[in-house]
Length: 405
Image (cartoon, rainbow, N blue to C red; front, side, top):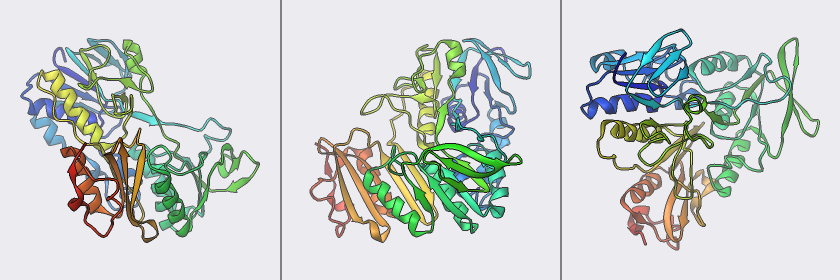
């Protein structure tokens, strides 16, 4: 390729960026390069429906091969870019790509435990299709499963492991579950809910080693010396943005590739989108790991490359299925100064509304889709729900909407 756009990273953001360029009328060549053997696919089902066998690899695909071919988007799978300049790239297989415009949608990689035994057979991570395939093949034969990390992936996988009849223990180093994403009230609900379903949850517990015999995992060792027996360990302690190529270019990186509202990096001709980025947020720079953000930033990055007006910024949203518990989040709760509970957590159907300076900024809804949809609509339209009325669960939330202060 001698002209056009190179998109490094066949992720959700990368696929959206390519599609949006074509939708904007851009006719220059586009090459979308990914290191996996698959066309761009959805990642959320890897710890949910795909892990449970409710969907297959075909169902994961974002778009068909025909879609890319019909639009002149060249998708190079199984190619890892190892060297990058502002006008050319080299892959591990020796391919050279020359381009006019560059987009980085390289995503993130799993964070690994830096403890003895972390590479034993039977220790799993969950980020790509191959990870989910290995875990799905192993779970039916596991009797004792230890999940290290009480975030979304860890809790989703713990719920899945329970359906196979395994004895499941979740080990979290912090003092509450989902600590970076939800309020203490929501954290406490998930702690109680998982325990009610037979999951053992240990908070404030650091892992110091993974024990094994003959190369096979046999347990997880905690800082207090306790060893938890295990024949399968899933490590879900977050992800690390892929910034290596950005650093080769000299781009500003700080917890991710730093971008402005137009998805421009510190080199204005280079854009970035998705899990690899850090963007301006309501309470300071923020990195958002979600499908919605990847799609939204992909559209914005495409508009920037094509010289089109920036699309409207969408309200961030996220979801997590943990067995029969569906959590839906809209907005960004960082920097909130007040929360209001709506409903009864013991009924496993409630919502938590977050406020900053009297205005609604986010909502967590557990098995409460109506409150989620109204909250998301309010955030999108500049509306709010008065905090002193929001807790009235006997009134539909939509009846309480007013203009934001």
